[in-house]
Image 1 (cartoon, rainbow, N blue to C red):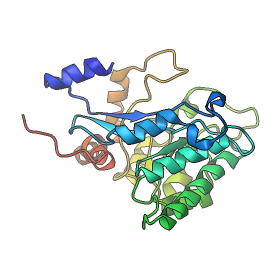
Image 2 (image 1 turned 90 degrees about the vertical axis):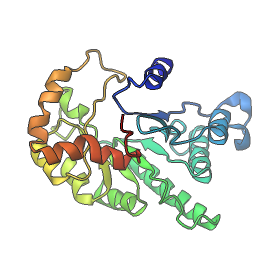
Image 3 (image 1 turned 180 degrees about the horizontal axis):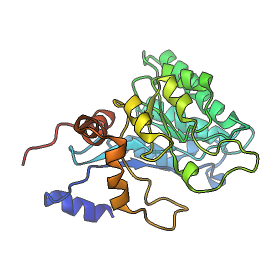
Image 4 (image 1 turned 30 degrees about the vertical axis):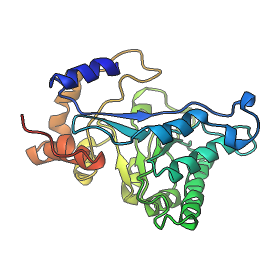
Length: 268
């Protein structure tokens, strides 16, 4: 995939901006011993040898996408490894993400991520990084059921949240009637930096209320999806989502450029 994209980019034929993030699935590995210094060899080499945000306006690397190591709850073998991954990213001054949606009845995993971010922020300040992790633009993917308190604490750390609407759209309501997807009004009201879906309840009103923070995109291809979305239908929705030219300019160009720190595109 990347060879083909690189070839198109070299030929000047790529017309879609691509940022390549790195997801690491290397958790606790028994053969490497219990010494935490021997765990995460892949992530350690990535942070030492890979440039983040390397490239140009159309094609560039990103940083850690979704997670630096698989999530581990307290008491599990993977928890110390997951925690070490957060510290390694912070010390390398890399952008970092974790993915925890929570549920209508439990936000314990989200709380673990938020509390860990706060702990690592304090540790980095103690290690002579005055802003801790606040300038690194860390994030929480799928923050569906984050509480008002958790969102406020993420905002205080300058962390962004991702609001993925696919759970609302996949047609699997809960038997108890509780919400199955992101609590959009709560997340918007928090003022935290956010990325959101193109399709959600009252999407035109939602886009208008967050004109400086929305971007347009697709979740395809993604694990668990069997049929590709109709691109024509998605493009047609733009007239409802962003009815004015100024809104479309913000949604499609200005907001992504600011979020991903793309330089101004070259004039051909």
